[in-house]
Amino acid sequence: MFWDKHSDWKTAETAWDRKAEELRASHPLKVLGKLPKMAGIAEPGIKRKGLVYLLSHDRKLFFWRHFFRSPIRYAYRLIRSYLRGKSYTRDGDFFLYGLSSEEDLKLAPDSLFILGFSYCHKPFECPSGRFTDQCIRDPEHPVCRQCFIGKCAHAAPKETRLLWIPTIHYIGEKIFEAAAKNPKQKIFFLITACEMSLEMFGDWGNMVGIEGIGVRLDGRICNTMKAFELSERGVKPGLTVVLDETQKRMLDLLRRLRS
Image (cartoon, rainbow, N blue to C red; front, side, top):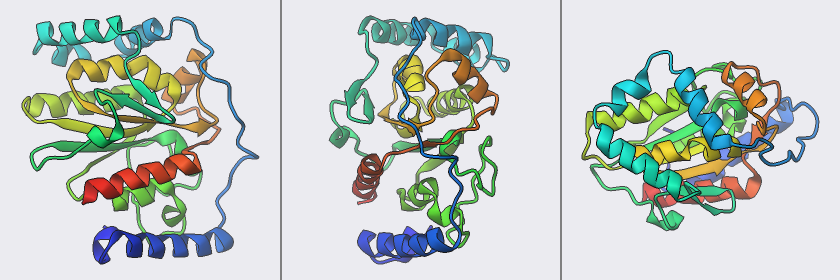
């Protein structure tokens, strides 16, 4: 990884940003107009609709297969999360699940850290394609070097599990699999997603018993169920972004976790 080739964080980030700035001038990435400030969630009964969507589109039956490995424990956690009202504590663009503050996210040698990115803020020119769970994250590629996702992937702690998320079932399956593989292992996550997804599916993370942070995306986000369902099929002509201040906050968190 790029960061590992440098003596410290500041040196690595300076080198990354300097080249990225050069490439923004010589190989500018396409953005379809000025990113709008979208309205918030415009969908009533969002948790109920999220549950219906998750179960009705579970073609691999991953939810039922994993749920019935420990149905009493999972049911208790899920009901408790629903009864709380909000499945998270919000701090700006950080949605905290099972944590009281971002400082509570601390990695131990035997813990698993999942760093995930919604496909919808991949650049249009992504060499791996947008609606895919692949990412070449090549620091010498002019697109990857300008991409915030690529920067985070290289800045992450060495043992990080990196995920590029095309659908909600994909990330759910990966988390269930990780929890089932080693039930005693502590799992932490840092995942980018639209506010609608963070609202709809946070209870499921609480059910599994993982802790972490969902990072709210801005730009051309999904704020209706119809837009969400189209996005889940790869129909996402707009671009979402992590806002500049939130990018800095994510990188500060990754820097702390590396140390």
